[in-house]
Image 1: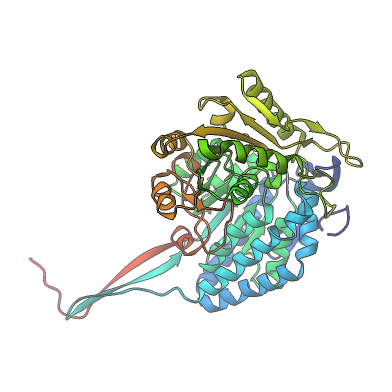
Image 2: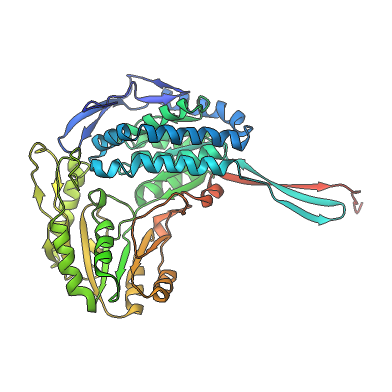
Length: 491
């Protein structure tokens, strides 16, 4: 998979090898900067999905009996291979997503490798609990895998999301059938190749392509014991409803409309950097983005001026150009959604301080480029303040009092992320504890180390990805009572 042609050997990866079924509907991966296809794959037929599920089921029991340190050794080897193939994977990820190569070289496959490494080390450390009861009895616990996990990925961070689900699944003795987004089908296949090369037994990590119907087939399958999804709130609700019919375990990492609060005493340049990272990285297509930026009165003018200066300097261009800082929207449809929200903001009376325009890039004329937009003079009930846009659109909101901004920040159905910038660390910790969000930052934003749990509150999700917290969501506890004395009965 190199060059402008990123065509994989086949569409699916099952039982340790590429598999094709040309009866499946053909769909294309388009390079968002040019609209040209870089690969064509077939959607999984019912037979392909069932083959992948059967392969996972048949391989899982032996994997569950494999000692944790042996499972971990394979994940550590996978991390090593991912790092060696980083540049190649980054290029394919850029072709698939349209994200700037300066992002994918340092975040996407790197994050996947970090995940494999973390859970590779963790797999050998998981131990049971001994519970003394009395002189003749005791109990102990066993942490056991759930079985077969169905993973459904998102298009904005394809290999990262795949690894976030694969690493804990495999470390804890599960098998995984993963469906990437139909918009970004490629790097999950590379991850599957890497796992096989690292020594993962066949059948434990399978990849099937397809649309929502393929995901629905996975979720409803009696073979599947757990579903883990990264996606939108409406999709998450459908997945949860389907999984509830058979009481499957579910982890959902969904959308957000996260607040970022800038207090008067914040370091100006750092606060501006945080706001930029919270809104414009990956062309604004990040679920945790802090798109509601609350700025306190005393710093508002200086913050706004510097924010506009740095925003207008962002370089849009061909994502494969190392100098490009922002690529296009993932698709024409997504660009139309973002443009619609920008128009709605203007219609509802907001002031567009900069950006929000379609831009033509030489050599990438078919790409859907939108200059990063900053709105001010907004009401809290404005559409662009309430709804997730998933594009480079920042909403600046004014505030005076701490209590007021906390209430306004929490006035949303979402609860994925939140951030605070201030030099007053007592205030920072005080405010963070009152914000209704699962992932928060003080004097930074959108940093997601693998050793820190990631997930949301309210309608932004259920469960946690990453860190030791993920162990609880990819395993189950068995309690064992041991009696060494006589057993009395009342009859």
